[in-house]
Amino acid sequence: AAGVIQSPRHLIKEKRETATLKCYPIPRHDTVYWYQQGPGQDPQFLISFYEKMQSDKGSIPDRFSAQQFSDYHSELNMSSLELGDSALYFCASSLVRVGGNIGELFFGEGSRLTVL
Amino acid sequence: GQQLNQSPQSMFIQEGEDVSMNCTSSSIFNTWLWYKQDPGEGPVLLIALYKAGELTSNGRLTAQFGITRKDSFLNISASIPSDVGIYFCAGHDYGGSQGNLIFGKGTKLSVKP
Image (cartoon, rainbow over all chains, first blue to last red; front, side, top):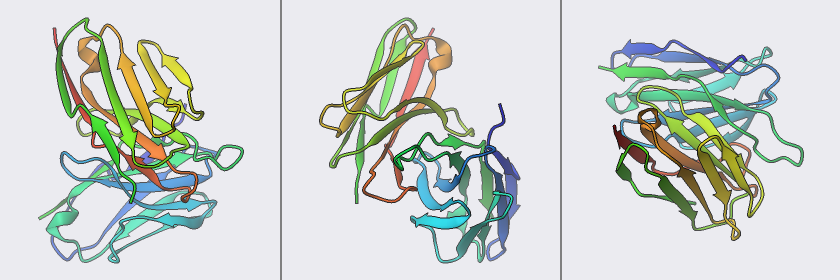
């Protein structure tokens, strides 16, 4: 079965540079989520999209932005990168259950961002 | 904000032993999800729970959604070396928005052959 696809898997950037991460959700899933996971930490919710509209916002810095396109893929744009942005970035997708419950989130393999 | 307390933080057990870990919340959740994560990989969904009192099994894994809706546990029976990893509980408050899946801090499981 198709899974969530993320690219690139690894990315190395300098401070103050920009980075873009891409996510292709599972076909027919209607919701995409972005999470950030620092070393030894639990995943922290950044932002989500439901049917291409921003649904919820978590601890996403103002330097970051995201969008979901007509083909349902999503991109996370990170500008003015800081050393503390080094982390694993996960995309997840789900299909909202009847009644609006969140459903099962399926995660991609993640994109490891290293800021030097 | 809401917090999940997951325990224990780590476990070091002998192959063949049973394992139990749990999560508690200060508020009610409508969904509990249990994930396993290997180093550098994405979390893999193990079990999803949607109803208070629900008990669900997936092979050697069993998880339950607490009656109070503020807790959940995960049991692993007859552990094997490939069970090694970090296990996360995650909860969703339907009163919040769709994207608000909150994770516990994880339980790191080590299995000695």
